Amino acid sequence: MSHHHHDEPEPEELDELEVSLEVERLAIVEAIEARNRLWLRAILPLLQQPPIEPDPNPRVQFAFDRMRIAACERAARILASDVETPA
Image (cartoon, helix red, strand yellow):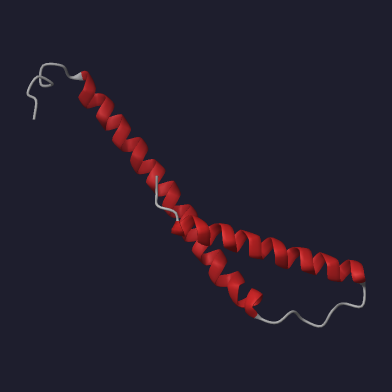
């Protein structure tokens, strides 16, 4: 421990700012993670069900397929971000 930062008050103030920024950043990260968990809990059961009967209208069916694929990709992204070690 160095004692010579007692006579210079500026770093302490900076530390306080850094701490509050970090707290804010963590709160945001936590909110995003909570929202992602809720989203996964809602969407994964739907994705696990076999696709419903194809719609007679191919454009409607295409839209459904695109929606499923987008949901799968988002779920994969969220799950992959859970696996990565936090920077």
